[in-house]
Image 1 (cartoon, rainbow, N blue to C red):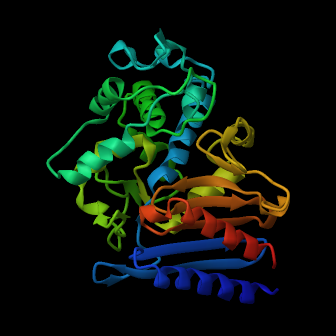
Image 2: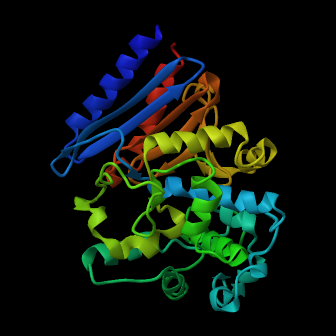
Length: 355
């Protein structure tokens, strides 16, 4: 199949997907491959009364975890930390006390940085229960540190550190604190200094926390949580933090991903560690250092579809497909696409393999 036909097919599939689903108010898709000579940057739907524009920045939810793990890897290459370090080296007793008590044994000071990165700390996830409180009451506010205390008092770890994957924002919030303690700067400042500015990502920021280097040309696309417009809930900000607060245009996200693949932010050796130090997340998907890595499964997942990247609960995705040297980036901006966004992304990759 020629490239123009594939491009048309992907665009048609995307627009139909958005148009047929009343839950999706706006959606965005960028597909880029130098190898296939394909570039597609499109949007469908509306943000309020504004027709969706490809230049709009999107809140990328847990795709932001890949930025956090990249910052940790930058600090690793600077010699500021080791992935094997125990987090007690960087976090005080006010956070560590009672953080991880499982079946009467305290593992709080046994957690390593790599456990946080790989989601294998065994810690609980306070994000979703606290999100319900935020959405129910706009006056409810809880800081990230208060959320950790709430988790200690209301939730239980699932296992000792290193035993299995338990996906939780708690891990990445702790990584955010480690980044701040090492650099002496706020997380969003480190993000701008180490990633946004060097990569000329002028249309990127942290939701409700920072401004882009160059003022946004278009408003941030609306994202929806069970029918509620999430952009309206500024009390959500500290609950998100280093677990997924990145807002960016798809073009800026492409800059980030291309630089990551090319070894321009961190070395290719460190990237290989991020990709290959994995544990099973779901069938056919392993989790590395902030990275979702698709594995080949006979019949279900052919080897030619193997890709890696990161996914977010709003139907956001940021992936690289080595087989076609393609970048597939997008967002459906609704939590009902938590899994459907990822499945759509794989359909795009499948079409790209036909060029």
